[in-house]
Length: 261
Image (cartoon, rainbow, N blue to C red; front, side, top):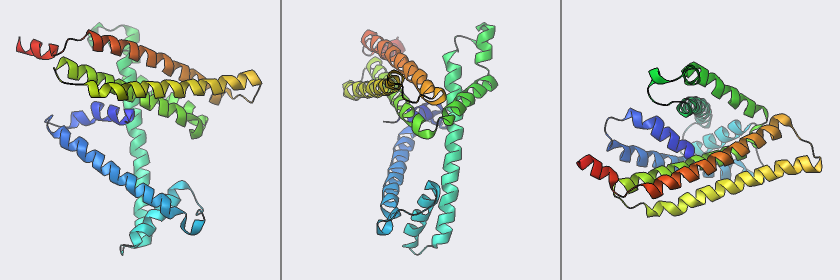
């Protein structure tokens, strides 16, 4: 379960379709294509170390070269296939960064949006301004990049699963108020929360242990990770509390009753 993809599909993909019924084909088709990409990636990983030796070059070069060699087995030019795959990987990175920037900006704006725009305070109008929100989002992303992707990756995984748990809560509430069965979501929802909290707790323990033992401590890497990890734990507890209150307090089929009335 990917929280990032859930944000993309709910905040952007849903706005590009004219009929809700089309989402079934779009969502299922996207998962099939992503599964094919995963299979191709596994094949590439297996083909990368041909002869038991890892090839030289950057990860992009290795991936593109391995896919080019794989395509060459089907009669295609390995050189042309390598160039095409390199371009595709670059485009994937650029479009992913673009999507992350836009979705981060939208989430930041929604945190401070309340009521009608004309009723918001001056501070809220500044915080929800698309230019200001974009600068803040990119600034904190830049700070995280300074610490290296290996340091950011565990936090990204925890935040991703936290978003996934939120999606499960939203789906559970939606299914309940519309009079449908949602019990099959409770176990994965609990697992997502448990996995997120344990991963964040382990990250905090490792960073605090550096402080206690006097190990090298980087303010821009370890310090920023500690602040983000604590913030994610607080958000996780708030989401769990509010989600359970909403789930337990909602009446089954209440939305249908309201619509019929």
